[in-house]
Image (cartoon, rainbow, N blue to C red):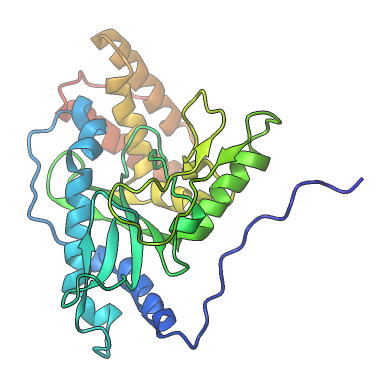
Length: 311
């Protein structure tokens, strides 16, 4: 019996004859170059480990603003031939997409392209971007992008924000993949319907209804694109392997969860010992020794008692 599941969506192929196609190629390169050019004057000091997971709520918007500023500062990367001299990126917090490449001499002109820009605090407890991307496909131009920028503090608990390799994908394709996952890949045969808003077009005016809505979503999980099979999996795995002060991001998250998931000092100490034992007994001895050294140093710096040696 043939499967009734349709094939998964694929990214749109853009016409080479459209000059926006070349522009988009350069814009993608500029976004991927962000880790080399991003600069922030924001400095965080005196942060407690227990407050670490709240950083995205405090600084997420700031990171997005500074990302847009950086893109405009490196316009020679995305407009090397000065073909778009009158254009610049601007952030519109009440619209979709929330960053648009607009003509600064003609504010009424249609944007050339846009991006839905989201910051991802790399040391967040979920180990994945947790935001909901709900825009309907018809609100996306084929030249629009979904961009996720991972970031962390330079010295883990302090310093200026540092950004890492971003995620860049066609916004329309991401919306189609999200709906495909919801309908066919979640492992449920009920509650798969999606209601799309009528008469939607790219670059709508502020506060226009542009979101798809699931017919049933008791868990509030619709739009969590980090869960969509095959969309962000490789990006998330690579980001969590990013070394920060010599230790991968995923291990810093495990370490800081010790202090946020326990309610009393004894439980913190017990959790810390389990984490230390796990890391010290992995097959990669050299790597385990580095991780253990960082765990011991960070534990001591945060006021913990000396941890025992692990046989």
